[in-house]
Length: 382
Ligand code: SF4
Image 1 (cartoon, rainbow, N blue to C red):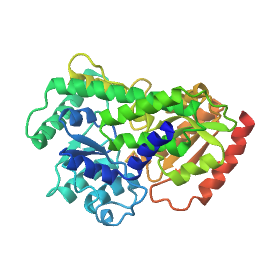
Image 2 (cartoon, protein in one colour; image 1 turned 90 degrees about the vertical axis):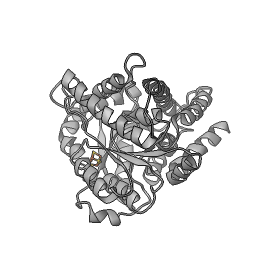
Image 3 (cartoon, rainbow, N blue to C red; image 1 turned 60 degrees about the horizontal axis):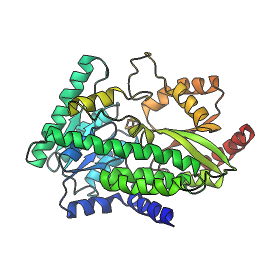
Image 4 (cartoon, rainbow, N blue to C red; image 1 turned 90 degrees about the horizontal axis):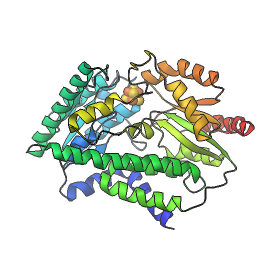
């Protein structure tokens, strides 16, 4: 019962981020929109403000953003601007716009032009070379720029001690989410694919203290249950985002559970912790430098992306039978990497399907047929 109640709370948050924004504003918090990917949310927290994730919306349609966007922009970027233009995010006090892909780069400028009168837009350019000293220095300069812009919105300085505290709070939250992902697999009869997605999605719209406290309570309840005797199959999911309950329900209908994920909106966002000792700004830069296996990041270690090998190993380690790739429509980085990913999965003898998705998707018939057929393949691999 406690599990159901906790999950329901997360589901309500995930289903209505706008209500959360209103709630935090009414509590006197300044709120900062944080677009994907890898923005140092800890700086927003350290400023005493509420970071608010911006990952598009499954409910909106794109209308006003069309005036600013080429038709081949992905829906995440277009819907973020749509929500800024149509009043959904009117309560924000600022927005951080990372520029990690060829869509987000022009998008940051489109948002600046569209919103300049109303909203401070904080530009963030991550370094392509993350690990060498010059990359760390570049990142440090960028994060200092974010800190300075947040200080303007706050009206006073952000102390180093507050950034160190924010790192501790975020590390605790990341650890709780990693534990939840493992428990969700062990208890996939209780934490179905849709529930799993809602719990993880809620983290983008809740203060990290509140979120972590509730998630740790849920983890404790799940830990007390015996590991389920799952008769269905399991997959690893990979891609940018898959938070659509209608699509995830198809997996449940075919007895497919999620064993682990390599999804930007989910585990990629909490894989790497920041050092809790030493200079906190350097710790945040080092944390970004240590992100790997992401097609959006240049892989300095091998001069090629190692995501394929990484996810193939994840399938084996998590006890899954295959991989589902959620291919975001019009996402150049993901689409261009796919042949390499496919090759790596085939070399590792990991079956997979590629599902083309976006947040304007309303017809799930084709996806249902593909998932059903894939379920039969997975069943034979058990
Ligand atoms: S989905 Fe792809 S194209 Fe869109 S913002 Fe993310 S990485 Fe960029």
